[in-house]
Image 1 (spheres, helix red, strand yellow):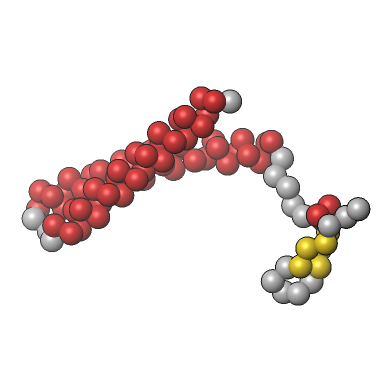
Image 2 (cartoon, rainbow, N blue to C red; image 1 turned 120 degrees about the vertical axis):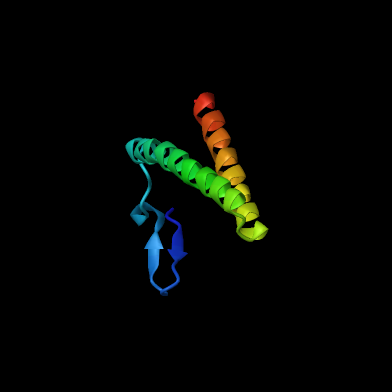
Length: 85
């Protein structure tokens, strides 16, 4: 028995026609995640330091600080996810 799914454009597809990610696709995505997260973390930390130092509106500094915190959390989550494998 094949399940039939209806997409947003109204066309029907079966589950066998859906794209599934292979292990190599998932591994490639994981290899790109860490460098991007580390780069964004560095940029946001520098922006946070600069905005705090030059006296820009404190909300801008808080925004960069929260972004830095979120990126750090993303790196921790990625580390824990990779460690479980």
